[in-house]
Image 1 (spheres, one colour):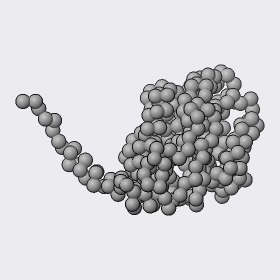
Image 2 (tube, helix red, strand yellow):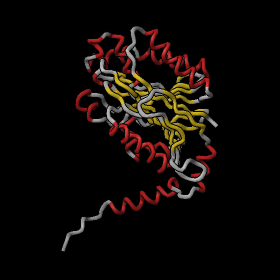
Image 3 (cartoon, rainbow, N blue to C red):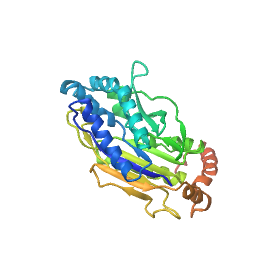
Length: 297
C-alpha cells in the first residue's frame, strides 16, 4: 500500500544553488521520513530558480523562462540523486523546457532507480498562451511504476475529462495533478476538476499546488491552494472523497496511504460504477451530438 505525499510548495528567493539543494533535500527527507513512497511537487515550482539570475531576470517574464530552463539539467540531476538516496518516487516541480523556439511546461518523474519519464502540459491557460507563449508539449503517457500505473495532468489539463479518461483507459490508477494558481477561484477550478476526475474514473488524484507570494517574479507572484489527495466518494473511501489535505495557503505535505486493491474493488462493486459505465455514456453522448435545439411554438 503506497503512501503518497502532495506538496503545498512555497516559492522562495534563492541566493544560490546550494539554497535550492538544501530546500529540496529537506522537503524530501521530511516526507520520506514519514514513509512516503511517492512525492508530488507542483506546477511551475521550478520558477523559483529564476531568482538565481538576480532581481532583473526574475522580474522579466521572458528572461525568467530562459533562466529556469538553463538550470533544468542540474535540477533534474538533483531530483534523480535525491530520489535514489531516499528510495522514493518523485514527480519534480514542472518548469519550462525549450525543445524548440518556444518552451513547453514539463514535469519529470523519477524513481528509486533513476529517471522514469516526463509529461508535458497539454492545454495552455490564457496566460501561458497569450502572454508567456508557452506551447503544448508531447502526448499523454502512462508510466508503469512499482507503485502502479501513473498518469500526469498538469494543472489546467485536469479540468478536461477526456484527457483523464484517455490515461485511465491506458491503465492509469493514480493521476498526478501539479498546479499553480494565483486566485482562490483558479485553485477551486483545479480542485473541482481533480475531485471530478477521481469520481468519474474511480481512481486516486493527487493535487500539489504552489502557495504564498513570490512578488519578485510576476509569472508566479501570487499562489493560492492546498495540497490534497482525492479518491472516489464511495464504498471503502472517505464520504467526502478527500483522503488528506493541508490547510489553505499553508506550506506542507498532505499524505495518505492508497490501496490499489481498493481502487479495483470500488471499480468492481462500488455503490456506483462510473468507471464501467463510462463507455455506455460515451455512446449515448455520441447519439446526442446530432441533436437539434427545440424551438418554442
